Image 1 (cartoon, rainbow, N blue to C red):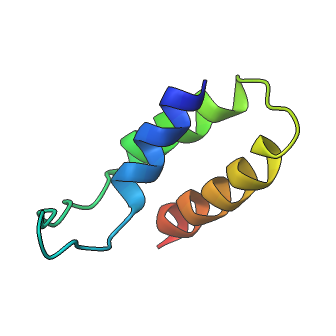
Image 2: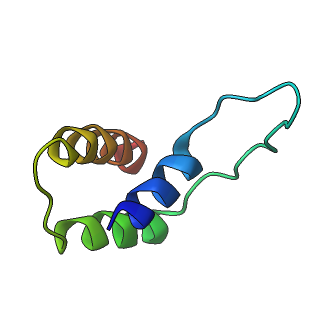
Length: 66
């Protein structure tokens, strides 16, 4: 589960490192956002993961409603 969260967080993160610049990420389609939100909703989270997932879902929802 942590790998999925890490992958999703890496996609959303927009910071660039001078030594290893990250190319800009193209915007998600509505279908991609729906897929990610559904995937998250079908998982079980515990402890400190809950806050991270909450923040992630909030960001994904903000992208979805744009």
